[in-house]
Image (cartoon, rainbow, N blue to C red; front, side, top):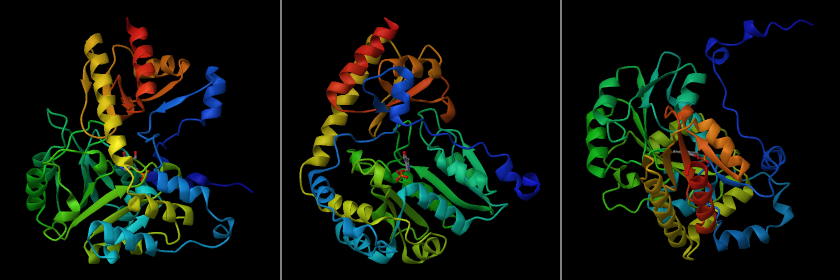
Length: 369
Ligand SMILES: Cc1ncc(COP(=O)(O)O)c(C=O)c1O
């Protein structure tokens, strides 16, 4: 039977160029003849998960697996409420915060609407908008590689439903301080929903960095996204959450798939929140040390670099980023090429444990010296 696919596909899907994930480790290792591979491409925390999570997962009963999870992650939302302050009805849990990005776009946007964000930021905001038939207005970062609040405000019009602010920004590590965040929210004045994506919240140690959950009472159009994939090191389990005013959370919940978060993920996320070990402190120390090692290496080579908040840094390379990625892969390190992030010939490197990063720095130097 002939299938006229073209006839069935909306134009925004036909034109969309999908993301292609890197191959599994085993395949990369075979292709590059490697005995081990260090992934420095996804900003994971290989120090984790924390002791309480390890214990929980080791003792997980097989009996939980045939049973559906809580459809709305109630126990986890209760723990989030007790840990962070807002009511449990204000939280929505997703299969990673990527699923929540999709839910917030579905809940508020229809074709003809637009979202406003930056041109050099986490690409999923743009992708979800584009494959939903929604215009993504990508505002250039300012001279200091920060989201540009005035230019973003100027781009907001009566079809703007969402503004995404990645704080701190992936990949530049720059952030808006509380005064800038409030100024932006005052400027928006409730005309659209503002999403503060705080995927790297737990890594930021600056006193002027805003905890946007504390701003929710002042701004009913604010939505805060966080994830268990980064600091809490639960990336494989896929669990993230949002917090907003109850009315906004309720609207997003209508467009959100129930039962999308599995039971081990819900249990591990609770254990991660309740863990009182010094795991987060140890991770922050690891990241501080990582920044020093990369800074020393870039300064020795005279390479431009951007070291901000979060567990990642950017390095400008004198050769093509894809060529450099391949050269580093041959030596057992996978980094993120940045041309796709509109930073041609930059790479992003996740900050790993010191012995791994020392080896990375020595390999990196040997390629250029
Ligand atoms: C800024 C930002 N937001 C969201 C995510 C997605 O996280 P999750 O694993 O919760 O889907 C990432 C992951 O890299 C990120 O960098």
